[in-house]
Image (tube, rainbow, N blue to C red):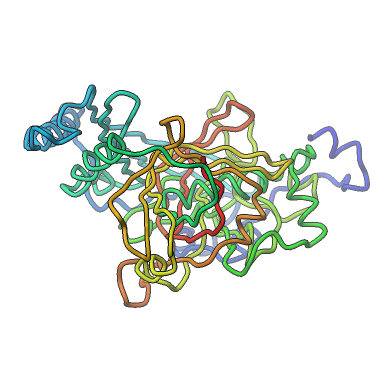
Length: 431
């Protein structure tokens, strides 16, 4: 890609000069970034960024193991309290995973010197029986406050396993689906996340470039998708979202970016070389799996914007359909605009009320939503507020993003959050 930039004068053959601090600080930056940049900063100034830690982490590995043991014992105590006839009473396997990671980055060029320290923590509680798996996935960037496992979370783990074990087989067809934030996030990530990565544009592997240049609409007024590495308060959680940081691995400061705005595609996410190659604005999406891997344009936190409805109001729009809460992976076809979103199971809704019936795919596995991305983005009937179960106006700035990961070209794994609010989509092909 660098060679192409040099070989094609029409794309610009001037020498590259790193941006100054003035250029880096242009645009709409989160106060947590600007507050950590000293006044009068110069190319010789060391600038260090760190996330807010509200509760200090464990002083030793022994304390971390003790914490994990306590959470596992809570999981087992709940299992033992279940009635003998409860379908999730005797799982084949149960697990409590605690992942504690500190990422330190140092960046230098002729115009800036920066460092950042990020505490990235994750907790997983899971139970399995046969081919069915239910789990709670929590975490984020911050201190001990990121490792939340509430009693309701444990109750949901066993309740969801029971729902899967009693689920009926779905008749393939087209249905209304109310997606919970975890599903919404996968939908956003796969719909116009991967296809809006600029190096994919530059290699002519994405239909999004053609659609952007033609300004053809790809969705209705509800279709607004953002990418943002600067989510330092994740929905109602008082810590940063999983894919957050202060600058990318090429020294560009994090800020919010629209990928789709009310149905119209916006410029893509970029790393340095793809921005130069395409002549589009630079964004803070230069990431790599590790120091030994190349930098690509990658997603950070990708999500649908919030709407104005409550959960109840969206449910009332469903004469018949399904509520989907638990994701089971996803895939995309950037060139053909195809999408697949997996749902562990779905819950039947009639006349705005849950019936208590649950369904899995016709083969007994996870339900799959498949189809053409613009068709789905034109079929969004409504979106909830961030605080979907409250009648009061939202107080939070950003929707919630779940802990996740992202692969590229069948490899290149990086941390990535994805989320949004509840969204109601019509005419979903499920099977």
